[in-house]
Image (cartoon, rainbow over all chains, first blue to last red; front, side, top):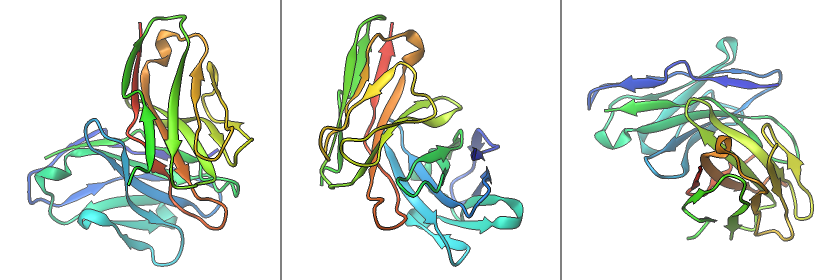
Length: 113
Length: 114
């Protein structure tokens, strides 16, 4: 079974500083990877996704993520953090069930700015 | 745009009571899901439905049941609530028939079982 690990439970950065949130996955086949953001009291919003092709993917709100197969990682980055980026971030992998998009989530990283 | 609507937003429920969490989507997505969110555990899949009339068990299905009578609605029922079911519940949907796509999430239902 696939699994997703987000090693950092909490991260605090200063406004304007760069950000990297780590995500490691365990999955036998080609993974379909996602980053979602959850603002307090809100649902989950998709930041970006990787299905295939270019391993550096751009998302909304100035975020990007890089898929590194050799490291089984899909880290999320932003060059300059804004106070409004404070939220919880979830990395997820699709289990490649052709009949649906069932996701396995990491435990989340709470970002404080 | 409505997307996915969940009701109620929050609920306090006595242990042993039953409750149905409602979920409706207006995107005509074929697949729908229920997840629960617990601190440090992220979201875990409870049940899913790949098309109207079919359902399946996810990672943590015990104590929950679902039905999918039509494309738009996917209610989650707790037959006899227990305190360990205190959580935030998210409904999601996706259009998975033709290609890889992302799931869209509702705003969540915060359930407290006392």
